[in-house]
Length: 219
Ligand code: ADP
Ligand code: AMP
Image 1 (cartoon, rainbow, N blue to C red):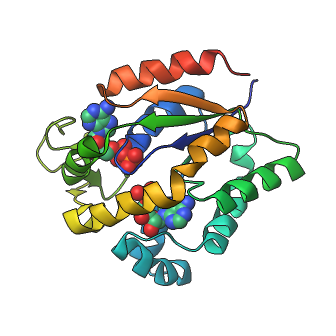
Image 2: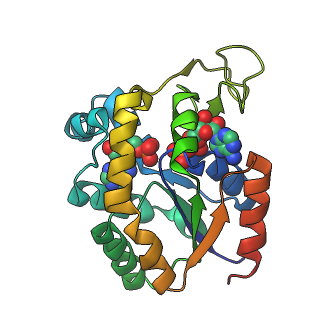
Image 3: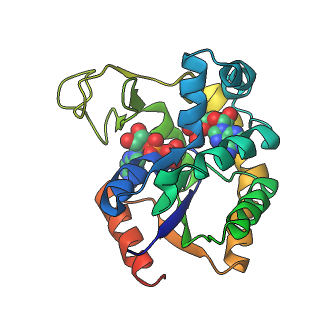
């Protein structure tokens, strides 16, 4: 079977988690979200969670050496052998270099890097209306992707909540951090011949269709 090793790139609120839910179901590959890994570690108050908390609270990036170690450990697990989808990693050039080195050393490579492009003014609206299932991590929006029963996840019945870092002042910092540290990766992956550009400023089904069409041309 064909291996599909994907990276979803894009600013906070672009729709990476939303598209990841669909793509990982379609390709039957694990969804590796570094943000989810940190939030779970914080909830469980593990040593990793204690280290990461202050960075997430302030909308800053967790230091590269911590994130790189976490992702390398995750990618060594067997369920990634048939493919994987990285969501929220890499976010810096050193992280991207580390990912390339890690995969190359294992005789693996990325299939494609999908950049979901959305204008900044749309991102703020998306993030302020975002709601997440505390139990399974499914993503909702108060206007654009409503749950059927108020406050209850359609998929698992868990309670929905608003992320602390989706508050407006933290959102502003997260966007600044994105433009400073992560946006350069668009060029990085363009030069590597891996970038697929997708218009994220359309409805969820439209973005998904564009991704699937773009992926047809990869191998
Ligand atoms: P990211 O993982 O990139 O931070 P999310 O997938 O969590 O982004 O999406 C951010 C918010 O925007 C969520 O509330 C989600 O329901 C909503 N959303 C995602 N994609 C779209 C879209 N194409 N149109 C409108 N709202 C969207
Ligand atoms: P996300 O769920 O992708 O929006 O990430 C939430 C937060 O987790 C970010 O604001 C960072 O504090 C941290 N984080 C997630 N992924 C990374 C990464 N690749 N590098 C550094 N910090 C990260």
